[in-house]
Image 1 (spheres, rainbow, N blue to C red):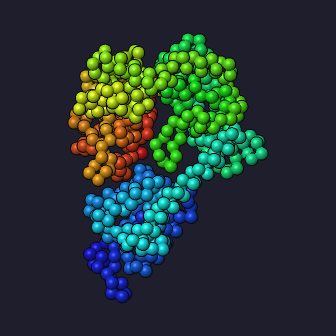
Image 2 (cartoon, rainbow, N blue to C red):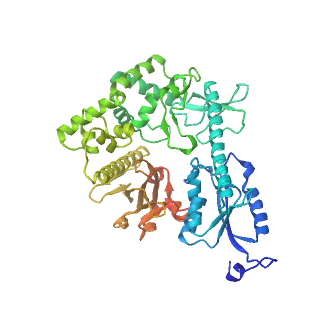
Length: 524
């Protein structure tokens, strides 16, 4: 909008104010439809003499966290960078700004806007957001009510889901190898079998698990029989399955974790188990103790004999008994390793035959540093950086190995050139794989640095982006090397062109290996 337009006045002679509108609608609250919010804000703007010059929208987004809300993130970035060409943000009400469980978090985002010279107004609230004591008190109450609404909804949802589990119905998740999801109607009559990406469409229908294709069922039974017969480890089982050319239910090579998920899952003997892990109100996922699990035995038709399953569980418990030892015992093992080597690191711990893996200490105590403190060990000052670097290097190596195995499973040919640090696929194109820590800018926004020097020799550049804390992979940036020339970092949002190269897995590279040319990936 040009300068003449920005200097418009109301009929009463007041200067018209340039304003932006922020809109949000979660799936649970269709009452607050985007169109309804727009209508209310438009009427408010007409009365107040505002010109809505920008719109930030988060449709179908939860209000519990800032993450996953690109509209609000972009709004904050524009305001704090000085790109915002408006002085007011109009929001329908306090709950549309967010249902943050810590009301101080909601206030902090509003404060950031205020410090940048942009105020926030709630057009449907019965108070002016003018900084007075009365408005601040009412706003705090409204924020608490918005947070409490989410907590109550979460509790009601949990109770309802637990009831359905006890009745034998499936509540989300992949069925797993050898099983399929089947819809039954309200009277219990079976309907169709759901394919991988299908969902039930009738609200009163329910989902159960039924035996899948005969060859998958046979594979599951073979896994249990082989495990009971040989007592092999999960990693050995995964390698054997990959050698036999068997893929998981997701069409991927086997890993230690996928072998464990089959060997220890009671759904194969017909037991419905739920709430092993939970992630309430967008908080960090946690593992729940067995007494909090919701169970229903005999819910599904079993595909593994109960006696065979029980024998497998006994063997598994014996093989991995070190995972069930007490905190005092794992700390005592750590002290022995320290006494032998005089120092500790992830690589030293993982190489010790009489000590649990470093990942167990992180899981038990929150971090290796905490475990070190408990045994009185003071690591070097650069310990955290070195440990993080070792962990990231290990993750990168594992990702490259998984990619090589996956390409081989679909009939492709891939090799890793250690000297050039490149993957060569089908002797047709090369892939560079890098990994990046998640860092925070001065304003608290995440970014990932890229070392693109020398990547021009590769055809495709892949960046593994970590989540905050650098323990979990966030996503994969897979792009032609020509697209990242001159770029040194990626942000959470990089524009439509670059964000189109973000993927949740490395599958695009696997699929590409079966095609004739690397250029096909970037066409259409």
